[in-house]
Length: 35
Image (cartoon, rainbow, N blue to C red; front, side, top):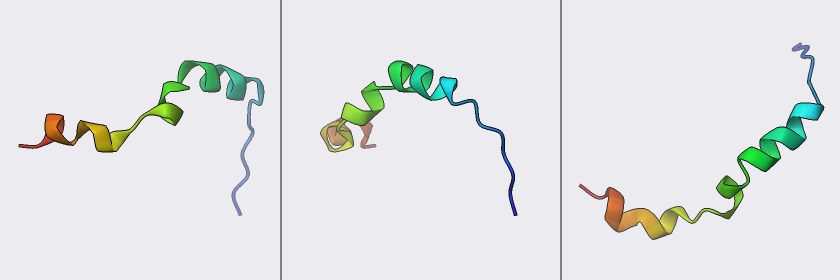
């Protein structure tokens, strides 16, 4: 059993700051990260 307190107000803050992760396209970076 895991019990956690969550700050629900922080959800909106994180969504605004990290929204670009939702729209990223990792497949477009293949040539950049190949060794």
